[in-house]
Length: 178
Ligand SMILES: [Cu+2]
Ligand SMILES: [Zn+2]
Image (cartoon, rainbow, N blue to C red; front, side):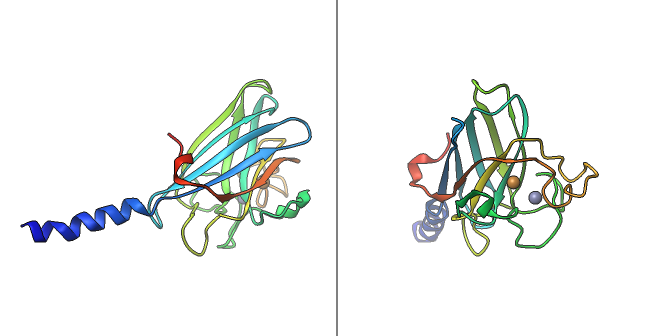
């Protein structure tokens, strides 16, 4: 009995031990700032994302993972939404959507924290489609989730200007949300 349980215990331990963590520290010249943390327990499992941001105007703001963590041209050099499967833009619960589509973050006003907690099943920290090294981005306007009927709806959700961005980097396990 003892011998039969031992491999199970080791398996359970290694499954827990492979949690990966990432973080993006957001900041811009207009004084907006915040942090996005990512934690994924299991390869191919969901990733928990927690975002807290100050300095956003009241209302919804599109939030995405963009292709690159490159800020040489500010948020513009993060290029498009991260879309390794080459599909159209959508909302975070739509079947057809970019990997980077996280929908909107609601801000009660610039002096208050805008908070988003989302469990994203397409966002990976493990493996080939990992978002580590890519760009976290928050827009000036609302993401129409692909349903706005404008030419930009199917690519960007017509979410307006690029307001806040940062590369997503590896984080130590202690920065795991909650
Ligand atoms: Cu975006
Ligand atoms: Zn998108």
